Amino acid sequence: MSKTVIVTGASQGIGAGAVKAFLDKGYNVVATSRSVTKSKELSSSPKLALVDGDIGDASVAAKVAETAISKFGSIDALVNNAGIFFPKAFTDYTGEDLKKLSSTNLEGYLYITQFAVKQMLTQKSGGSVVGVTSSLVENPIAGLNVSVPMITKGGLDAMTRNLAVEYAKQGIRFNTVAPGMVDTPLHKDDPHEFLKTLAPLGTVSSVKDIVDAIVYLTEAQNVTGESLHVDGGAHSGRW
Image (cartoon, rainbow, N blue to C red):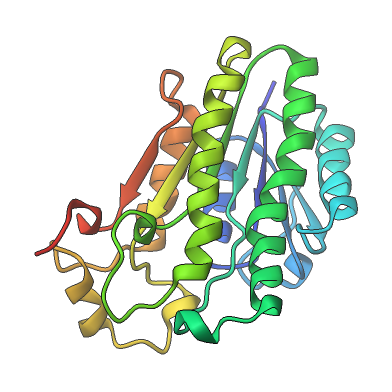
């Protein structure tokens, strides 16, 4: 029987790439974002279910989980890709900014992961949860002012390590991918020659680079509590 994976933030970029990769590997996929049914990158198929909504809303998360169970019969893996990110000087961030970041990046992880873990515990066959964070959690870059977004991304790293231990006996694994600069719509207006200077390898990651890491962690049966950096070496330090 095919395994079922949920992918959040799935309408474009890394999320859409992950959906396609899992479909190619024979998974059933439930893809969700605010307007995933309008995505130009995804087309409906018997193995793909699309659910619109704000993943930071617990009722939307419940609907996504229910769709996976009713349509495909299980939840075997979850990719928490949904996230928002915007740079500002620390003193310019507002309370509203923090609420927006927390809603998508933290609550968007919390609710759907709770539903997925409850189902995995019922199934008693383990499972995988992969989050997407940032190499900037460990390696800030001068001039790239993202202190408040990193509250949320760093929180996901900490939660992942704790959950990896909490559910190890049940065979449910928790990992994160920590990208650096990625060639996605988020950076479409940024000069790529500049972005290449932000990593020792002098590269900008492709969507496939990040998707390959997500798929690897989803299927790596002996890896848990890991943060896999896909950032051209940026987390290694100064260069």
